[in-house]
Amino acid sequence: MSEDLKKTACNGQEKMLAVSLSQEQQTKIIEVRKLLGTLSDKESVYCSDASISRYLKSQNWNVKKASQMLKQSLKWRKEYKPEEIRWDEVCNEAETGKIYRPNYFDKHGRPVLIMRTNRQKSKTLKEEIKHFVYCMENAILNLPPHQEQVIWLVDFHGFNLSNVSFKMTREVSHILQKYYPQRLGLAIMYDAPGIFQPFFAMVKVLLEQESYNKVKFVYSNDQNTKKIMEGLFDMDQLEPAFGGTDDTEFDINKYAKRMREEDNKMHSLWTKANPLSPVSQNVPSESVGLETDSNASNNDKISSSSIPNPDKYILVNRQDKNAVALA
Image 1 (cartoon, rainbow, N blue to C red):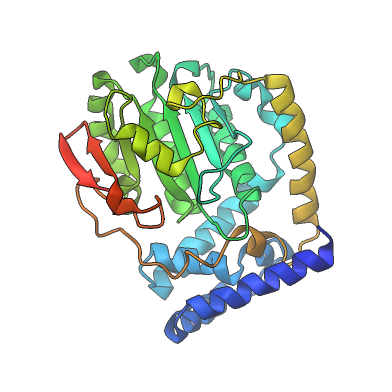
Image 2 (image 1 turned 90 degrees about the vertical axis):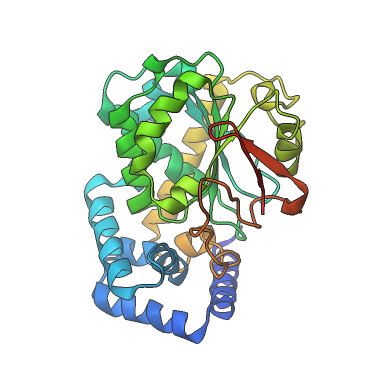
């Protein structure tokens, strides 16, 4: 796509955002900008109206809290430089295929990150976190214009407790909730064994209510799981580990080639430092104005934007044995 077309599309998205927000909400975006003060080129790229609205939404449209949260994100991004992480810096962490982005989206256009719990081979927390951040940035880079969230598919086949780390989980939870607000659409925990439940009970205190509501346990031997997965994904694209029919194995060499190509896209996107081009393109306006499901209780709810005809599907949360409507 040409730069002129990109700008046109992004301007259109900003206009759609303006339409989807109330006058009061648009005023709050302006108030946040005033509190942020003068921004660098990169900070201006990040702080599109759509981006600011995500921070406001995560803080129930509280201007002071949202601006403080956004300032912390800008500070973190300035120090950590997540957009500058490249494949060759994380390839050793990635070689087992423990986290990767397949070349497909869910039926709502959300990029997918697949996480294989039994392929955990990390030696240091620092490198593990860097790899996670790289994957999040790459997924966001590939968001289509109408979407702003990412789906996690977590494969528990072959899982044992040595595959999980409280420190890693704590850091991931912190980074996701503080620096990537409103980016997680769903975290689907597929065939999590009983031995995982005590660990989850321990770490769920790290999750804000909205994040907790997005964690969904599904099981291959549950009659409703197939309906849920078919509602979210094209099954001919999905791996057998998640009930799909695509048996193509993860190929690190092909994946590395694709990631290096996308590193070039990332570099090009940020070096232009155009306040309208990167973030506006990656942060859609459609879902910004939707009501959050943060009032859902007991991990029982998926928002109506998460699954086609949600009232048709039932999800059984194995942890509490409650059948819950996906609505």
